[in-house]
Image (cartoon, rainbow, N blue to C red):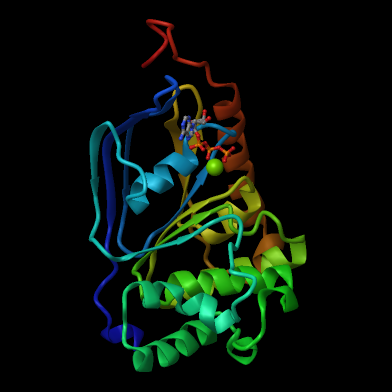
Length: 262
Ligand SMILES: Nc1ncnc2c1ncn2[C@@H]1O[C@H](COP(=O)(O)OP(=O)(O)OP(=O)(O)O)[C@@H](O)[C@H]1O
Ligand SMILES: [Mg+2]
């Protein structure tokens, strides 16, 4: 099973820049190496280019300068909205990427059940999205990203619409899944607590232009379960990240201001 799978891939962004047609400098000279099996969260104010960086990692957006290096056909993308087809069962929703890839139907059924089992949804394979809770719908969306067996997972604020309890539960499950299977993950969130709970590293970005302004490595001695949130080392890491985020929020815009960029 997981041990037999190829080792986790890395993702390299080298001096990546992206300016949209309207002149917005979404990313300016972003360099970031996500190591194999690493879980990196991106935090930063609205408009600092988090989604743009994720879309470039997914190959959905092409940078106009710089380079992205990662293996092909290894990426699963989970959006903020579960975007399930309401008229199709959970199993059919999860099967979609395999049907797109024209996999044999006899292979699809076991692959779908495997993906559903990995997110704890095996018993509701025949249900329709409207019959699921918000958290279950998000798990179905994660199963759909897992069904192609990607080694890289990209998440864009996936749990933002959930209540706190549901969000904590999914955070824990996602941490277990990514650690157990040594997935390489980039996770966009607006929550400092979620970023610290999940990540091996938190990268902080600032806007105008979108750029990386700081990062914090996260390592905890004990397990990452619910007790972690009450531990002093967790609170300390959250304070450190919050301070960097505050700096990022007030970082001067370097647009059209010669001499302010360092
Ligand atoms: N297709 C596009 N065309 C023009 N401008 C865009 C496009 N996509 C994003 N932008 C702009 O690029 C900047 C970065 O957008 P992006 O969506 O990456 O930010 P973000 O960090 O994900 O923000 P949020 O936290 O609100 O999701 C913003 O100013 C946005 O308006
Ligand atoms: Mg975004």
